[in-house]
Amino acid sequence: MNEGIKIVEVGPRDGLQNEKQPIDVETKVGLVERLVAAGVTNIEAASFVSSKWVPQMAGSAEVMQRVPRLPGVHYSALTPNLKGLEAALAAGCEEVAVFGAASESFSQRNINCSIRESLERFRSVIEVARENKLLVRGYVSCVLGCPYEGPIAPEKVAEVALLLREMGCYEISLGDTIGRGTPKTTRQMLDACMKVIPVAQLAGHYHDTFGMAIANIAASLDMGVRTFDSSVSGLGGCPYAAGASGNVATEDVVYLLQGMGYETGIDLPKLVEAGAFISAALGRQTTANAVALFESVGAEIFAKNPHTLYLWASLPGVPDSLALAQGLLPQKIVMAPGRIFSVDSSEVSPWSRFNVGAVADPRFAKALRGTLKRLASRCPHSDDHFDG
Ligand code: HMG
Ligand code: MG
Image (cartoon, rainbow, N blue to C red; front, top):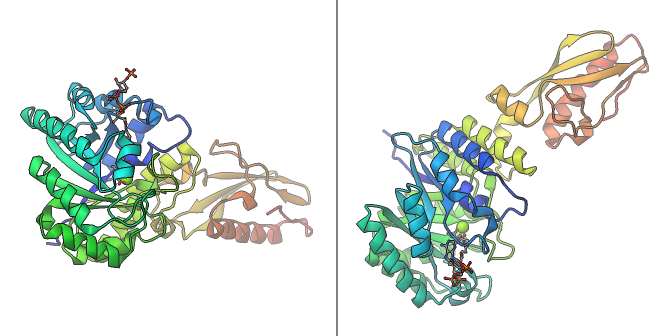
């Protein structure tokens, strides 16, 4: 049997905490439901922080109460202090996470206290959590660079990680908060941490600001790391690390791991569907590259009358619901004599008309253009054309 990898899906927390627009509980729960349907078993679904500091995480208690509780599915939530822990306990969390940093300035900006003060706070959070039989995860941020201080010494990362481990965190997640790491610095940082903590208790949490996260995961795999945090659709960032982009996309991590022969238990097409759901809800483009696998498309006509054509886009490996979520199928093209024209794509109904030029994915637009051209050549009006 292939070796298993634990993926911790942090999209509902790290992913959504940085969004500018309000996100309702319904959407957050809908995302978690789809992740679970894709086989994701470890999900950081909430954050019990001050909503003055991170407004997007308001409603976390309701999210935790509504997510599907299934055997083998584990949820966790961030808890910076005892107040957060109390809220997490009341909401039925089974796992919480404290989050410290290897950078003094980031600690101050993110949680309003020094590293030493934060560790003192965490000590009591961890104690009470464990008395209540909760698992506690520990984060160390800025392990490969700080937005305020620049490079961070690997030894400083190892020191904070060890303190969290000694206080009772079962796993230490190493956060490249601003995505500055490269395989070389990742190895150096891991090397320092592995001198004091068994690699089985370390996790990689890499943001993809400079497109290095997949390379850093590959380097970490070589070093023996078997747990990685990621965000579906590449959502994410930290409100207290300007310029930090999303976490590495879970779709790309799964693609990498499957390709390398590791077992994740995650169904990639269904994961892509979860990503399409949240991307559509937020009106954003995915940053996951693996999504392209499911967009090698063709388009064909499946019904026709003198004025209306219905195009069916065949998307190999993509369930219809995903294509519908992306507004790809079916599509109605209205014909006028001598002219096939396409209009506004802003209508979201599956029967909406669309403008080929507005289709985001160039391959999809190309496939549709090809179909429309073939169609025009078969049309009785020889001067037919379409706006594309
Ligand atoms: P503070 O202002 O120093 O706290 O904030 P305070 O104890 O003085 O309390 C101030 C107010 O906040 C009070 O309310 C408290 O009740 C309230 P008021 O009397 O003014 O009405 N408060 C809380 N409310 C709800 N839940 C709580 C809570 N605690 C106090 N738990 C605090 C300190 C830690 C609360 C604040 O700085 C905070 O919430 N920071 C969170 C920052 C954050 O969430 N950052 C993003 C997550 S970390 C991250 O993304 C990195 C990671 O992904 C890894 C990586 O990428 O590196 C994990
Ligand atoms: Mg993060």
